[in-house]
Image (cartoon, rainbow, N blue to C red; front, side, top):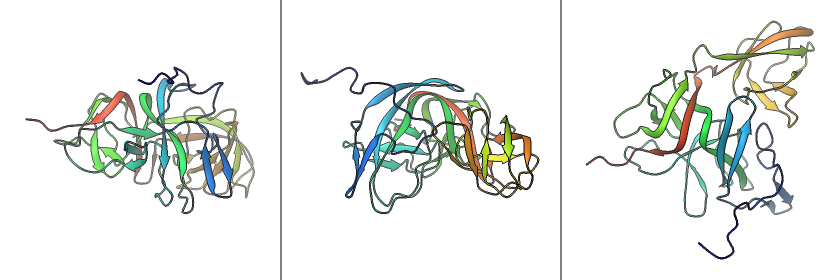
Length: 251
């Protein structure tokens, strides 16, 4: 511990959910300059999922797009890497709060869950109350020997789970107005009258009331929209975790 350490290194309420991953940094000609120190751990309260904690990591330029709930590890300089599909890693893991797009030119900075209740990007639906494990790089699913995520259990299975909102549609437009996006996130599937098949959420604005869909609406007016925790081959199981870690060696 250094004499310069502080309890709360940031001041004020910082937006985290449903906002651009770089909202807390300043952009210059050379790229992004972090305004929140890497490795900072902050508490948050999600209006749908409740309280949790997140860590700030650097996402190197050229990193493949990270989905919401993508599983991560980090090094001594708090640089992100996708959680390897390797047994007996024995290291802490975290999960992306927001989708982080590919940026070929600049490093990016993003928040990742280390405690709380949150969706995790998965290759399949896992039953509530079950353990969960690594199935691919950055992705969880059915548990297997040496690949369990410790200090974590599935709270809600992805399959069959959805959250409905009243949305105002305009035929031919991808922008939808909703009262709020609590429980919704980029990548999840959306169904409802006037919504084409296989539509997903492409973006959510910082206010949480305007959603951009991946396909234009086919009808105008109010419609009940169901946000599903599945989209094609992607699943988001809701995990409850406290400082989760990839399983270490068993001797």
